[in-house]
Image (cartoon, rainbow, N blue to C red):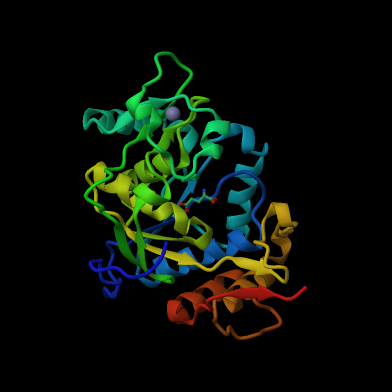
Length: 309
Ligand code: GLU
Ligand code: ZN
């Protein structure tokens, strides 16, 4: 996405209020690591600073990518850091009916169509990764097929918003992605649809997550609107990268967090968020988080977080 927007929503400067509902939405593809803890802490502090709610949603939507036991281990790790959520954890694996309903709602607006294009065809498109709408004109007759949602091509109708950390954003979905998949050929609902359906169901007002998801925001805002809801405020935290510019994740050997080092982990997370917590010998998680809530200031979050190697 790039800047230069003519019309956009103003940034969120609203005073603290109890209407705030934030969330942390991990995928159980592995254990919590430093990068995901940072997102959890930032979204927690922002929610609590606004005297808002902080919900946890387990995004167990894609069983082949999941690791046995990871969902429970993530929840235990959050608790070990005294990051306590409100209400019950929502599990995407139990939300099929809601996703199906949203799919039908989009279908009733004439916005969906089946697509059986092969991966090879999609890769070879001149405008790839944007889809060319081939199956909209030549719908496949039999399954298996994916379902795509249609993006109006004209008049150009870019998605514009001001991101809490990344500033003004503008995306012309017809150019960047084209009609995109909301139900995969393998029968699994796409992340883009599930996140929006759940954010609506949970009444999320503020999304604070890693900037690796900035690219998804345009598609998600489009779906919010098509499903009859105003998109929440969005703020995409810079992701932690190591000295080689790689995102800290399982693939780049981000170590799972040690729950017994919870206070040290929190201290580091607060520092990475631009805060300067008191260094005490006997730091404990509750005190650190309380201190964090009192001192949380999104404008101090550094734009890039390079960890020397
Ligand atoms: N489950 C996604 C992830 O772990 C995050 C989804 C979101 O915050 O919207 O990358
Ligand atoms: Zn197709």
